[in-house]
Length: 180
Image 1 (cartoon, rainbow, N blue to C red):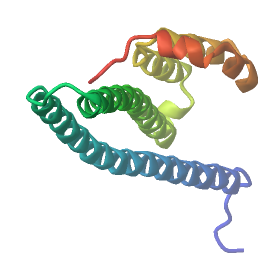
Image 2 (cartoon, helix red, strand yellow):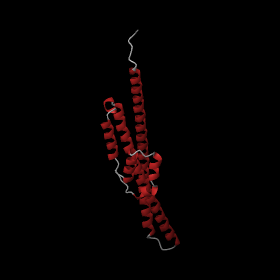
Image 3 (cartoon, rainbow, N blue to C red):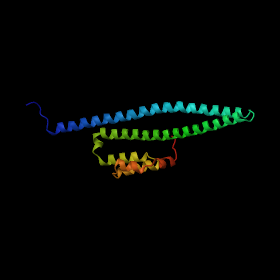
Image 4 (cartoon, rainbow, N blue to C red):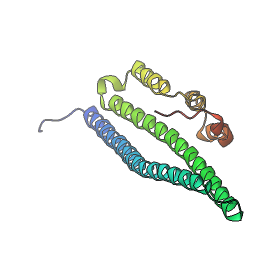
């Protein structure tokens, strides 16, 4: 009989194969997140430039209307300038929330990369201290109270539905926007 392998070796090979496949899938998730963020950042850059130009144009129009004689046309132009300024402010708020989303996706991407490193290292894979260190590393990246609460809830074993019900959009808007 040719070299025979112990019965446990194919089982080990299956585990190794599953781990490699899991690592590849995690790497795919990381690449997709980073690609989406890069595309989003380019779009936001274009929008930011456009809104900056709009603010300048509105200010120029507003300044030019001061030289006009009073009347309904002047009043209408000034009101339109105020409306545009208000809409630009609303857009700036949306950019701030996009920045918050971008920060969160960066944290997710880095956490997945850390998980990938752990899962692909057999010496670390079955070490409980390594898993605990990973959890602490991931938790340390969260700076917003709502994110910390969600992380703690996950570690306490709460379901996704429970955690999502904890987060209210109104509470999210109350938090400070963190720009990086």
